[in-house]
Image (tube, rainbow, N blue to C red):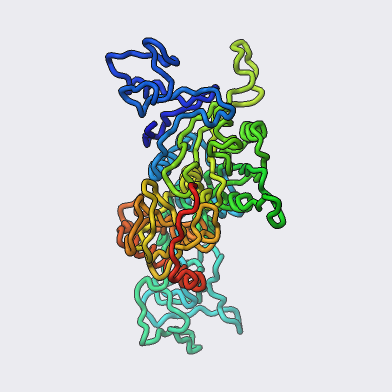
Length: 562
């Protein structure tokens, strides 16, 4: 079946395990002169047999019949995989409705680091809230020289210190000592820095001839940074230490943040070991230690990682009973005798949003929307008691392939866009980078290849097979290679890894404010590319051993079908 790049999927799995088109899709594909039902064949019925048995006007939209088979995951007809760009777009839209109805979480500043602002941050006060001195020195009134105050007998006048309340007005022709950050007294017209003034001890202050006093110098006027009500940062801003400082200065004790989606990781496979060396046909689990921290770097609250045996009931129970917003499985997404993800989704009445992606490695990846769960006692119309268990909002399942690099491909293709929407983070702005070497491509599918950077060029890494992690462990990102490959010097998109993107792709205050105000300048595409290239060059210079290790390396052939 041809797959459409639409938000709502055109295929659903029924309780018997059939892949069915939505009714509206059928109505579009029927010919006006041949009304047919959705039966299993016969006169005036729409055949559900495979296309090779009976041609139809629209063979790519005709569901096939399932036949008895010992493994139900193999019953579904062959489907065309979703294109890589469409898969990412579908994942980004999948949870839009759920996010729109999620209330912000108020967090004290001490707990808000790393969270995301749910609403724009508006100033609760003027900054500064009053006129303050920018320097240690003297507050002046009018032109000099200036009369200095006298303190108690034998003592100097203490002057004005930070934290003091409003002072008496300063008369014209007078000066008084003032500290940095102290409130400027009414009547003051400037602040003279300590190093620019001379107190000869005769009660008069003189300014250095080389530094004449200018009206308003070294005074931070009220509202210089912002006025109360001004928008300081937009929604979607990552809360950094600097954001915490700004929020505190602007009057906040707590911040409205986006609720982090709760994610549970289910690692499938009887052959996986959690410790020691591989033996007796069993291998170490590489995905269990990797996927949870990766999801956490994408902004998720990882509830835990569970390892399951290759048993259909165990997989079904784990997915059905999970309280997570997103369930991430590793392995079991293909159609082998021990691949239980598709049968589990059928049993749960899930809605397949993406079932296979035209990308290498990782094409067996999938994204599904799990059915909403109704309250346990909602079926009785005469029952006025509150439900024993409230309805559960729609949840999602991301099925990753079992090969490690293929799983990374699934994380960046499906999990990252889905979680980006759920966490309220802005979409990344990756800039193109020229390839330092030619990269072999797949005839039909997009290819994701680990790369590092030498100056501003993307250097493909050798260990890029679907079962390999050596390349991605040394990589800065994944280069997006179009079908057919790319020649040396071709500019390609590079997907930054979450730990590198957080340092280089976070929008600046000017970039963010430019989307909401008329005064702030918009960043041009050229500036964005220059900024990205400079950040990547700094990263490459900070990791010279990695860059040198990749010099002259070739791309290895694609390893396996994943």
